[in-house]
Each structure stands twice: as C-alpha cells, then as structure tokens.
Length: 490
Image (tube, rainbow, N blue to C red; front, top):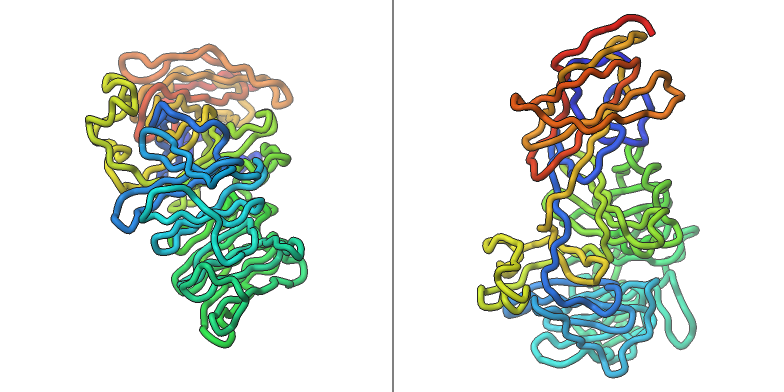
C-alpha cells in the first residue's frame, strides 16, 4: 500500500485485519502505551537481597491501624511478613498443605488479617500483636476466595465436613468474624449461586455496602439489606465471568479480568470488552493454557499489567501484557516474573540501606524513589529468584516494527533518509522482500548520524521498518521518511 511520509506508530492491534489502514504496527515490545505515544519501561530491580525459599502465591500490602505499612506474602507451605529487609515466617505451627495451583487470598477486618488457601483452615493474624498466624475460631469452612462487604467477611468456593461446594458463599455474623453459625439472629448465613451455567465461584470483590461475586460464567451483586434477607443478590451477567481468579483486579469502582474469550472491565453493572479486535486472539494464541493459574495482575497509574506464561516458557511467566485504561491501548513486555503485586512502600532510612543492599554503594535507585517513602503506591513484582522487586532496574530495549508498505503501489522504492520521531536514542533496521509470500529479510542495524536521522540505500518493492531504542525515552511516536525515490515498476 502507499504511505504518507510520516508513519505514526498508533495502536498495536495484532488481531486487526492485515490491511487495516489505522494499524501501522506489526509488533511492539518493551514499551508502554501513553496517550498517543509509547514510553520506555524499566526491568525489575531487587528491593532486598533476601528471597523467599519457594514461589510466591499471593501477597497483600496495606496501612495498619497505626498508619504503618504491612506486607504479607504466601507460598504453598508458609506465610511471611516483609520488613523491607527480609521475609520473616509467620506461619502457624506445622505450616500449610497448599500447592502451586491455588493462591493465597487475604482480607483485612479491623486489626485482624485473614488469609485463605482452600487446603487449610482460614488463618488469622492479630495486627496489634506480634506472633504468627493461627486458625480462625468459629469453625468457618475452608475457602478458595475471601472478601469483605461492610461488617461481614465473605468466603466463597467452600469445603467442609459435608463436602465441597464450589458455587456457595458463606458469611460471618455482623461484625463478628468468629461466628459462622448460619444464624439469622446474628445475620450469619450462606447462599448457593445456582443460576444455570454460572459455575464455580472464582472471586469476591469487596465493598462498603455491596460487593460482587464472580463465577466462571456469571457476575452477581451482593448487597447488604439487613434482616431478614441480610444480603440481596442480583445476577448482572449470565454469560461472562472468569476461570482465572488471579487475573481479576479491582481498581476503584472498576474490575478488570480475563474472561473465557478476552479481556474485560466490569463497571458495576456490565462487562465491556477491552481487547476485542485488538489483542484477545494474540493473547490466547500465545498463552500456555496449562498454566493459567500463574497469571498475576497489578497496576501503575493508568496502566494495568498482566503477567503470563507463553507457550515456549516451560510454564514460567515470561511476558507481561499492558493496558492503558485512559486510551484503551495495549503493548507487551518481555519480563520474567513469578508474581506481580501492587504494593505500598515501607519507610526506609539511610541507616537501613546497608542492611537491604549490603552496602549503600550498591543502591541502584534514587534516594527519593517512592520505594523508600512509606505508604506510597508502588508497582512491584517477584523475580524468578523469588526476590521482591520494583520496576526501577535497567531500561528495557524497545522494538517497534511497522507494517509492510510501498511508497507508491506497484512500484519499486529506494529509501534514503528516515528520521525517528522519538525523544531518545535509537537504531533502525530495514526489512525488505520482493514478494509478499517471501520471508522478510532485515538488514544490519543503522545508527543515527549527527543530524539525528538514518541514511540508507534500500531498494525493494516492499519495506518494513524496525526501530530499536537504546535507553530511556518519554515519547516514541513514529518514523518520518525524509527522502525516497520511485525506481519504476516491479
């Protein structure tokens, strides 16, 4: 197809039609969408030299009743607190019997932290006291999922002495997390979610007056109305839900999740597709479907990140797909993680840096980084050594690959000068082929001259361009063809 002298990158939409004029990018890697452009992104940087002994399976950070930041992390067999220097085991005596298929989930109720993994009794930790987790009193059922609605703890996808009930939720007595008696006088109770095809309960979304129950194929509102009903339940979605609990992310009044056919955002009334005709097909074709339990999600400002294992990753999360909620655009990152975590930073003084990094000379973050200021939202991830990290490491090398183009349809073109529209250093590779059924051959990398553009003599019927960034940049917008000539018919 013929092109304009300026090639704006625009949206990355790998699912769009091959000749969609609005889609100029074949691929984008290691950059994040920001407005009408892309920005660089940094790799993981270990926040502590210490690491967990095994893979993390769930984490929570919150401000305690005394306004201090607390972080807790679970593995298959243990629970830990993190003090910005080390992971301190706070498991009950004997540890736990979980596995890597089901994650820990947490909920805070006043000054008590609750944790559940389905295989063991619900755990509690009094945040006003030192000591370890213990089993929650009152004989609650074991549960895969936990949430808090008003003055109630809600458990979902349950197991007790009578069997397993994957479509059932149960709640404690009002303002009493040790009352699981199913007694209307205390407002404790339970409910089966029996709508046809709804499937298992897969997530509980917390709220002050109402919350939401996600099932495999349904989403319901659970609203407190008092006695005798206690909770009114309205099914809002009958064909949408999630089979991947770890893909669900609550951000304010919105809930992002991966459904059976793509990415969605739920606004409290309905689900809106956000990946349709953009990245849904790409994602599911790339995803290792046998390891979806390893997916995790977090956010940084307007960006939502899902870490996932690709088909060629041997079951390890090696990619992150990124969504900008402000302009509905996407990109992807090649970063290996074991868990993403939207954390809160802990207070760190200069005297503590030696303990964290070994020596202050090894600190690779700015001293005014949010990582060192207590209570600040900070996007974190665990690397594959199971260290808690921030995304403040080395800037990733980004790539932008344009679609195939002809400067004039049916003609052979010689490209001679191209300028990158980017606030940073970059290199360029020219991809050529004679016929559309041939392999694209990328030529050696070109460097910018002193005037800031690339000089080449590339003659072919079909061209595509690969821009490779080196270092940090705030805006990558596209490429401009400064000089090209038409050589004649093919």
